[in-house]
Amino acid sequence: MLTYKFEAKEQASGQKISSEVQADSERSAADKIKKMGYIPITITLKSNGIPLFVSFKNRVSSKERIIFARQLSTLINAGLPLVQSLRSVLKQTKSKALQAVIAQIISDVEAGKNFSASLEAHPRVFSKVFTSLVAAGETSGTLAASLERLALQQEKDAEVISKVRGAMVYPIIVILVMLAVVGFMLVKVLPQVQLLYEGFPGAKLPLVTVVLLATSNFVIKFWWVFIVFLVLAAVFGSRWARTLGGKQVIDKLKMRVPPYGALFMKMYMARFARTGSTLVASGVPLLQVLEITGDAVDNMYIKASLVAASEQVKGGKALSDSLAGDRNFLDLVPNMLKIGEESGQIEKMMERTADYYEKEVDNQIKTVSTIIEPVMMVLLGVVALVIVAAVLLPVYGIAGQSGSIR
Image 1 (cartoon, rainbow, N blue to C red):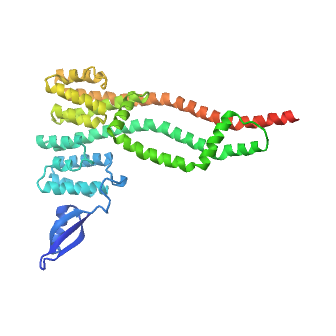
Image 2 (image 1 turned 45 degrees about the vertical axis):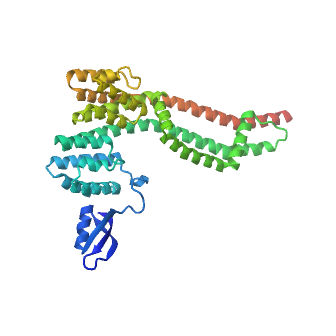
Image 3 (image 1 turned 180 degrees about the horizontal axis):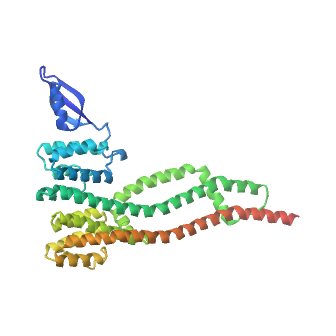
C-alpha cells in the first residue's frame, strides 16, 4: 500500500481539507476519498520529503526491473489484462520506489495513456531500450513476447557488467590495503624509529628514512589536509566525470588503456549486439535501433560512430559497410552484420555476435587477472621493501656505531 496526500472538499459544507490515505494506486485513493464523503481536488504520492530517486535507497535496481518485466510478461501471456497484470505485479513488488512508479503507471494507463508512454514518464527507471521494446510490442500485439525478450536482454547485460566490475575489484582492494599498511607504518612505526635515533647524537639517517619520516610528521600534524583533499577530490572528480570533457576522457581511457581496454571493447560489442538483436527481433526500425543502441552502449565514441553510420544508412548504404573500418568497432561486428544482411537474418547474426563477445568477456577477464596479479604483487613488494629499508637501515646503522665504539 502507498501513501497519498490529498486535498478535497466536504460534500455538505464545501470546506477544504488536507489529509492522507493508503491505497494501491491514485484511482484507488480517489475512490476511498469519495467513500469518505469528500470530493477530491488533488492527489499526490507522498515521498516523505525526499525526492524520488535522489537518494541511493530510492533507486530501482536492474534486478528489480528484470523481475518486473518477467512477471508482467508471464501475467499478460496468461491472458490477464494489462491493468490487472500491473496491479498484481504491484502487490508482489517489495521496492517502495518501484511501487510508487508502478502505481503512477497504473493511473496513467487507466486514464487512457499508452503503456509505453507511461513508462517514458520515468526515464530514470526505464531506459530507451525498455520503452522502445514495449512500444514495439504494443504496436505488433506481442507485448508479452517483447517483455520476455527485454528481461532476457537485461539479464545478459547485467551479467556482463557484473563480471567487468568484478575484474576491477581486485586491484582496488589491493591498493586500499597497501595504503592502509603504509598509513599504519607512517603513523605508528616510523615515529618509534625516530625516537630510537634521538638517543644517538650525530647519527645520520638514511635518505629513505628521512623522506618517510618527513612524510610521517606531515601526516600526523596535518592529517585533516588529507581528509579535506580526499573529500574535494571525490566531489570535484565526480562532477568532472559528468561533464562532456570528463566523459570523453573516461570513455577514451576505457577503450584504449591496457589491459582493461580490450575488456571494455568486448563488453561494448556484446552490449551493442545483444541490444540490437532484441530490438530488431521486436520489429523496431533499423535507424531507431542505431539510436537506441548508441545510448545503451554508454560510450560517447561508439555512439558517435553509430550516429555517423545512421547517416550513411539513411543514404542507402548497408550498416555493415558503414561500420567497416571504424576503429571503435571490432572487425567481427561488421563482418557478422554483412552475413546477416545477405541472409536476411540480421537479428540472429547479432545474437550470435553477442554470444561470442559475452564468452570473450569471460576469457578477457581471466587474461586481465593473469596480468594484474603479478603487477600487484610486484607493487606490494616494492612498497614493502621501501618501508622495511626505512625501518631496518637505521637499526643496522645503530648496530654498526655500537660495534665501532667497542
